[in-house]
Length: 197
Image (tube, rainbow, N blue to C red; front, side, top):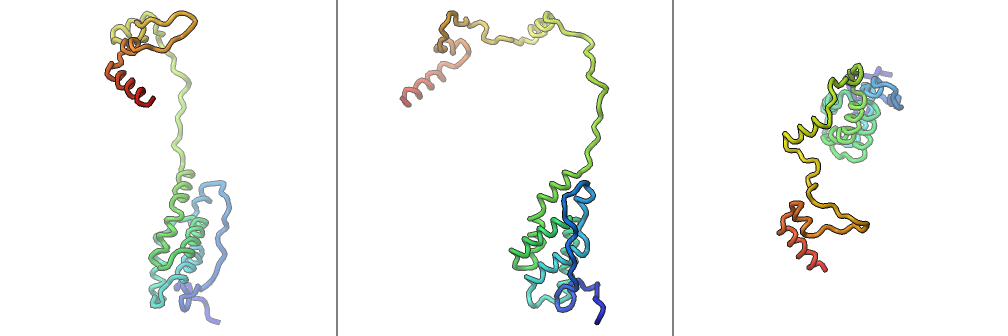
């Protein structure tokens, strides 16, 4: 029996040279495992499986090898479980080798970016020694002086008499005008409510 030629990833006649089991896929406790790139065997198994289904009859072994090398370079760094996921979608929907890598990337791009973000080292947080002490407390008289200097009004409608008595009332047209509402806007609102009724 002849030794297997590892230099040709497609083996003889375009069939896989060997089948290996997928890398162990499980939840990760640490970022090293979550972002561990797929192995050469993972790439061989998944990409060859995709290519076999869609390779045109005229695609030579050399062409297949070049395609596998280019596809692996494009997908380098992808974790094994995401490669398996993307390749499954590619095997299901692709009808030409040119669509395989794009389909895999489209399938895994978001989860891969999410995983990279989740396992990105955080910027160290610098903690202060505690709240800063305020050197001087501002008095109500100082606040009133500052407000007067800058024209800040705490109660902008304080000049309007507050309704007295037990029964509250709705604001009148004069109340709205005293608050600065343009009478033309009040007329427009009044006309719209009459039309609706």
